[in-house]
Length: 175
Length: 347
Image 1 (cartoon, one colour):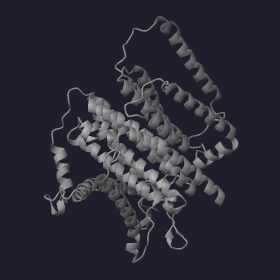
Image 2 (image 1 turned 90 degrees about the vertical axis):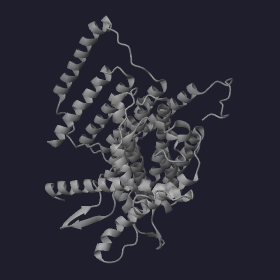
Image 3 (image 1 turned 90 degrees about the horizontal axis):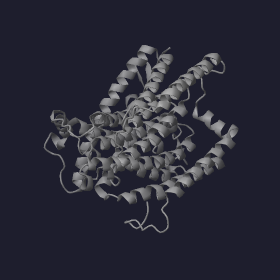
Image 4 (image 1 turned 30 degrees about the vertical axis):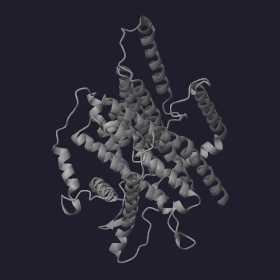
């Protein structure tokens, strides 16, 4: 019972954070709302029994990725965004589109509720179970994903590296 | 298993006790630092308030409480007020999963010396400390001043970089002990090598390298000398907390010292065998000794912190980043690979 109440409360916080993310005018406000969304998602994972995923969600997304977002916003000193009155396309296509999408998701969820559903606290989320799955059953997808990440890192390094002709940095070496 | 009312009463008592002890420890770590650094610099440190200046933390506390709480007009107020709260909350929360000793028996109930024992304890600490970065970063940004912003930027870059080394240095210990639970990690270190050497993780294989990496990363994470660039007073006035006064400033101070204590406790638990040590004497002494050993090891770690502060100069920022990424990070990866190979070979 307590689990269910907590699940609903944090679900509401998650949705409220997501709405606030869109409404906020300042980038910092939006980034912090996203942190709230990530953190409440982590609590939802925890309530489902996926402790490890919850912890990783906080460490990686709330703790590292979003800190970098905030860092970039601080570095660029981005100001408040300007509001326009909104385009007509958004009014004509966007709102009915969102409504239709929401209805579709709700319909699928209601139709298929109960099939393969995981009860609260029922996921086997122990680190050992996840480690076993990653290194036995899903070894190939896991390794392929790590190669993908490596390629992304190489791409980022290539894009960020300075061309040869650039003058050396004042300290004499790049950090 | 305890019944629900007993569990709630025991938990509340434990939480209040731990918070009171932690805050007292924070206050007296400040006193210790002033005293030790004072003696290292050939002066006395605080002496006027109480014997050996022992009441100085109390006087400081009263001063912080009654001082005028100044909010500069140009700050972004909601975040300016929230930032110190985030910092101090994260710093105090992480103590919740740290075990201080074995269980004690009170009135027939066996109560573990820990607020809560969860099987991902170590990850919880890493998660909470990684969220703690926001306190510093937002303080720097919301103050709307150059020095604060520079301090906040330096702090967030530095803490994100060194968090990786910190995490990687702990993975070796995790491979050796095979658990995320801090209690199980400590229990895996009981016993001796060859009958006399304590079976602490720091003495296992090449784990002293991991300990060295952890030590460096921990100094950087808590913004201490030689990595205290976010508040480098010779360049940035006071860094991210330049604009703060009275209790809000004190909250940052408390957060820094509480983080130091958490980091010291974690080092004790993971590398120095936690509360293990010689146990002897009458039953009462036997009940107290494990906690005594734990506190003694934490104290030694804190003393080294202060010692380093009294000894080393500050790094330059590019040196800090190069040290983190070009030296500590590869070393941590190498340590991880070697430890994994050794454990795989032995099993």
